[in-house]
Length: 513
Image (cartoon, rainbow, N blue to C red):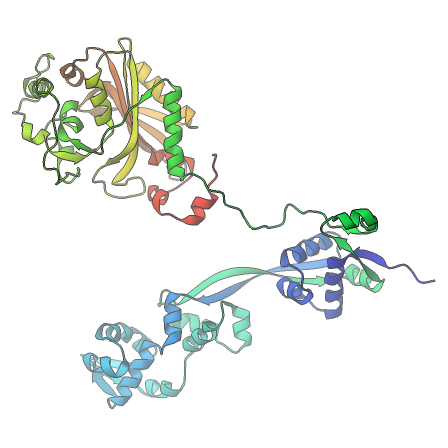
């Protein structure tokens, strides 16, 4: 009486049977193609059988090559240096750069740029303006080098491994050396491959006899009625297998930061206000007691607007009150800045340099407290672009008008905001601003840079700011950058990554973090 055969799921039978018949290791992708089963399923079967020592898996890395954009161009026409040696041959063996353009089919610039490759390959020599064909160049007329052969081999395929190319007779090392200085010709990457084979235990299992058990991938009404499902193998779901990702629509990460900022201040009892992007110098600078010769008002720091040529000023009483404060302190008991204030400079329109222009407008409109307002939106400055600076960025500015307000209240408000935004490591450092006293700068620790990053400034408005606008109560004020906050949230090392529109990053960035 013969021993009973071992029943295994149909796809497992195909894998084990194919490996047994081959008798040698197979690339996992080749095995999947041979038996007509999806590679992810074959991989799962091999991994499961490897755990019980029926299959061995040898993971290897190999270099995969494909043509880049420049490589595709070289594949469609002769290499420039080959076109030039053909032109030199037609000209009797030598010629000047301008003479080589027409017979080579290249422009003068391309001829000049290709001299490097001619000399590197030893195909030509240059003395002064004359290019002379060498013996090696004449010999190369009818013999392609390794780089040309490699480009031709890759032109008709998506990609090939180094091993495949070597097996076809290509000198890949020599070709890569010749192409090393040519950017965009080759696209190289390391690709992992898996060689699978039966172990001694696996071969013994197959020799002992296998039978394929029908596997059900979907329960149907017919299977349930007939009862056939009772004797069949129902394929389990493996939730660890790779699957096609589904990317749902979602807000841009920066929009999420802005919306969260808005929610936090609304939760803290603030009212939201708006202001125009194009602001008068009066509200952007003068109302904040910033002198008209301050460096921040220079062309290299501020975007001035050509049209309209002038911005509208508030009522004459407000303008005169601010003017007097600048010149001699007005009614504030300050000495002012001691200069002749120019009303025409205050009319110059600018792209707002901070959203404080919005909060100071709100204060002037309703100067009596208690009141808490904020404004969030883009601001514009002539910044030198680096990993933490952009010329256009978002700020949240706010003020608290309250007779009982104190500097401690200001620090507490800022600390509450950052904690609600999910940050705990921040620092307050003394600072100077023309319109606040005392003043403070807010810093947050950026782990990826190992550095404290400034987030914005804050302070209590000076009497020279509030009193000309009819406010006699303490006013807390701040302006905080949001892009830098986003750098922390999304672990970015460069602020510009927020706006590079890398679809992969936008798709994969979590909604909540």
